[in-house]
Amino acid sequence: MTYTDQEKTDIIAQYRQGKPIQELCAEYSVCVRTIYRWAKLYCPAVPDERRTCTVKEYDALLHKVSKLENMVAVLQTVGCTVHAPLKERLTELELLYGQYDVHTLCEALNVPRGTFYNHILRNKRSNAWFEKRREEYRILIQKIFDEYRQVLGAEKIRTILVQHGHQVSTEYVAKLMREMGLASIRSTAKQDYMKLHEPEKKRNILQQQFQADKPNQIWVSDVTCFKLGEFYLYTCVILDLFSRKIVAYKVSRKNSTQLITSTFKMAWAQRNPETKLIFHSDRGAQYTSHRFKQLLHEHAVVQSFSNSGRPHDNAVAESFFATLKKEELYRKDYTSETDFKRCLASYIEFYNTQRPHRTLKNRTPCQVEELFMNGK
Image 1 (cartoon, one colour):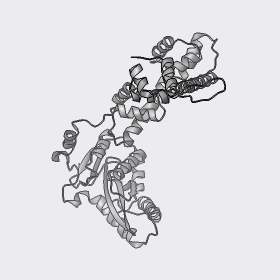
Image 2 (cartoon, rainbow, N blue to C red):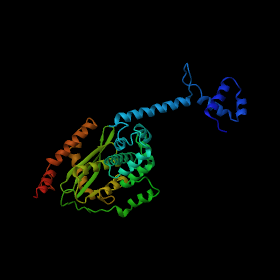
Image 3 (cartoon, rainbow, N blue to C red):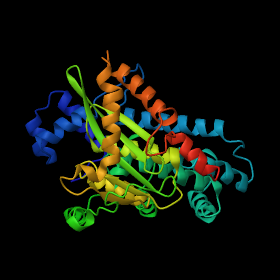
Image 4 (spheres, rainbow, N blue to C red):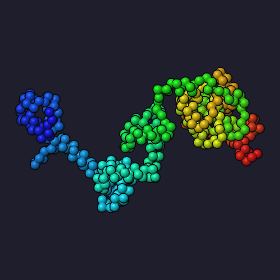
């Protein structure tokens, strides 16, 4: 049986006047739990000399006040009044679409919701605001997708966006993800992983032929470890095989995939290769990880690996680390991680710009690249 708010209030009034709850339950065919719930919901919340209001009425008033505050905010933001032509009102409301709910926007300027939706859909394709909003959400979706290890789907990403104050649908997020080529973890994840890790995929393209015809044709990379006090520091470097120049390096306390990917991203941002690039390294877990392989695939980079147990297949990178340790790391006592990074940066600058290389006919890496750029 359904009771009106007034009937519920009368029942609770009898209960508060001392009528046994069992009699009320029998008389009105409701359970004890319902009586207690009504008593809590319809109890006087705001005492006043003239009247009282229930918790439900109080919550409704709060909701109404919040809505009116939003309407005032809309009226203070738009550049027209409620008496302006309909087209002008629609244009102003369109600028606030997504910041406030449609009910509030339409009531603020007295615009029918159906008219507003028709205006939005009609102008969607050619509207610059929509393109700007689209691009903003593409950036946010990519950021969340990467922060959560590229495992979230459209529904979870939409939930996170809503938690940050964005009003967007799951369908809209899914559509943008499809356009961006983003996909959550699938049931075929293991098969995709195994395909990337098939033995025949790990080809040794260089075959110890450490020559390149021009810059950004072949990069080689490796990671070395140095103990500093009670912890270890891992240094990842990327060299251009043409000039033997260190094009990027990173230092971290963890020998992780993040160290490798961040170093590659730095090298790519600084060099921006125009030709098809070959990236050579050993078969370390970081270089063979799905995440790093995916990064190289996104940049159309061909990956090459040293053969198992053959360090000479990556001799250029190994040689650089031997030189680094002999000329820098084993000659100094570093007081801190900051001191280590500062001295490493100074040495790599020296290595690239001042130190002559026998392989380069006693030129520096920077001189070799400069000569190439000048056509000599």
